[in-house]
Amino acid sequence: MSLLAFDDVSIGTELPALSATLARADLVRYAGASGDFNPIHWNQSVATAVGLPDVIAHGMLTMAVAARMVTAWCGDPGAVLDYGVTFTRPVVVPLEGGASVEVSGTVKDMNSQARTATVAIVVSSAGQRVFVKSTAIVRLG
Amino acid sequence: MSLLAFDDVSIGTELPALSATLARADLVRYAGASGDFNPIHWNQSVATAVGLPDVIAHGMLTMAVAARMVTAWCGDPGAVLDYGVTFTRPVVVPLEGGASVEVSGTVKDMNSQARTATVAIVVSSAGQRVFVKSTAIVRLG
Image (cartoon, rainbow over all chains, first blue to last red; front, side, top):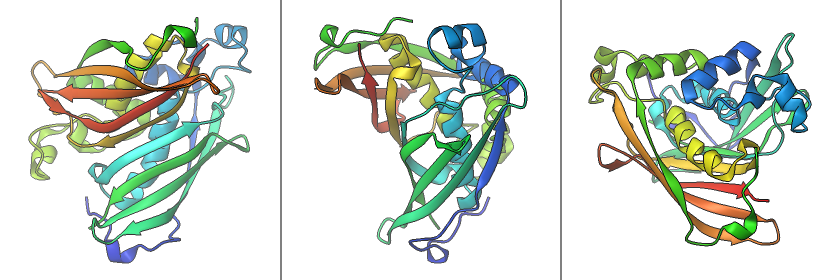
């Protein structure tokens, strides 16, 4: 893995966008991997009974997909020093075709002393923003 | 799911602590679920070649374990409005026995207008803090 150089990045740099499809099977795998077996992530009856339009993705799974855009860009998953999101809308995952998740990001701040970049991440699904204030701080080479 | 009542919580409230074991197999499952197949999470040779003591857990997997403590306490995964961590040390996962992860949390702030609580989360493994400044904002009933 080769870490992206600080000097190759500036405020306004756009990260290569990432598009991912989350299928119901991914949510079941994620339930097993994360230990979060809440049925709203795999059972439509339970999801609709609590007022959701359909099964929704685990928020942390969507966070993981978004983080992949950042780590693919900077070249080292260990370079992500800080990561946080404000959840706004869930990613609704229909049985047929799953949900498409679009991730993009822009460098909003650079710290030359710490050699870090702050990336503002935009995640949307079905034309709606999924997170607001989603930010990662990344160490650069 | 029943959402914890705002009036049953106050600043200083301690959340029931959670202890989890992350085994190598969990990391492999998480790789498949999240799409992050970086070999530092499943191949000891690669991990040590890049300077790590051994295979390490995905940071987002450890975040997911920590989030479970919060959602188990508040009773509704959808009530987590905001979640962020600063990564400090990785969770090192030996082949034998896996890694033990200890999660605890304390309510640090309450907002009666928004009916939210801010939880400071402490995550440690092998006696070392894994995150600093790990915080979740939770909507209460």
